[in-house]
Length: 290
Image (cartoon, rainbow, N blue to C red):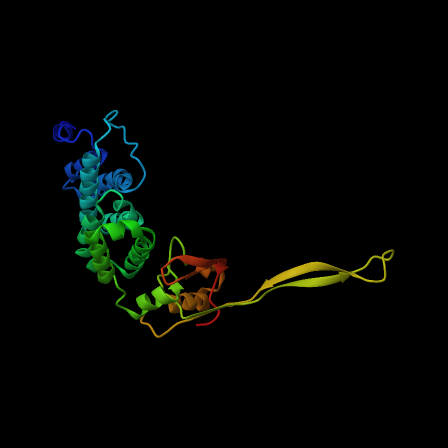
């Protein structure tokens, strides 16, 4: 902590430099300890690159920084975050990439947009297809909603265009996903299965049976009551691929039955800009045909 305060004496008005310094000083040689320390530090770094004002008061209250100091602090925070996107520890790199993607547009109002985009353009070659797709989505949103800033700052517009070029989909699934839609695991698509877009989706009919009912003292016309509701199957079509996840899911059903193979999933349709336009959540699904 003494070393931290000695360094911070030059940046005592800057929350972001405070956090960045703390991460740098905590890079222990012990891999397990280092992982815990940096994950904790990333939780502190996240608000430093976002639009949300920092609430870090671990070392007491801070003096309000000037605009120039705040901009420098933002750049320092983004520089460190970008560095961590290439960390040797996958859990650290993946989390840093998600933080960078989720807060990408927040760098623009602070004058750190072109600086950040240029750094990321040199690093994204190691990102996976899902990470690149999410990054493209944020870049397209920035182009759509940050128009005034892009018109006023030529360097920013150039850096955004260059980064968008570096993240361009290179595979069939990546291109299909940008045009048709996304189907991804985890936070929004299908439990435990990594998959790209589909060229066609057919959602079966939902029907509710009716029951005619009449009591003896009622009029001669029977009433119609609702009965059982049935849901039709969902059909997803796509091109030839070397991915085996869906095939293995079907094999699991064949081998052990449907009960142990059920998964929650979502079908998300996006427009050309990558914005979600429609979504269907399906609970406890299992494949009947592959």
